[in-house]
Image (cartoon, rainbow, N blue to C red; front, top):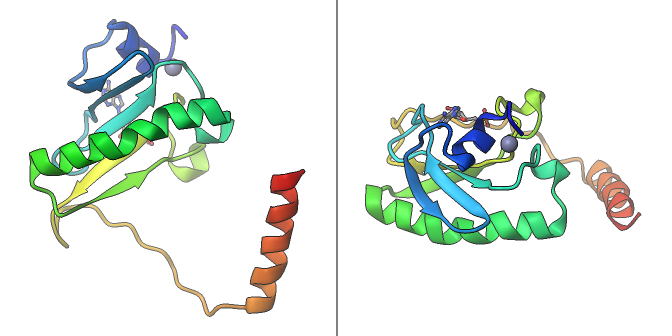
Length: 139
Ligand code: AMP
Ligand code: ZN
């Protein structure tokens, strides 16, 4: 796609700091470095996000993640890593070519904060919701 910034990185029209490349997958440093070493792993073939992937596309890109993530952890000396995919604008997606963020973590004050609000569990509601999702998966 001509107007997709990540397709243009894949084709070499736009420069990037590549850390990994094979026939189907590319990984490069995120230009805004949430923490040192923040890397994006993308499929070379354009797809909007994870929600739009079929199983093959998902296997292709996700299968490369552990190897790249382990190398990134070693190279940066990070203590751990958040691995995140934002899907659609409401979830923070700003580039609409699927990508997985690998964000190395260095400690409490490394600049990244991810927080979830905790709720008291309602087990009846959880069971109902699980049933609804299960039905949708097998539909
Ligand atoms: P998201 O908000 O999940 O869609 O993430 C998009 C990411 O792409 C952001 O973290 C941007 O910093 C990053 N980004 C945008 N343009 C470039 C670029 N030319 N090279 C590297 N990373 C980029
Ligand atoms: Zn694209």
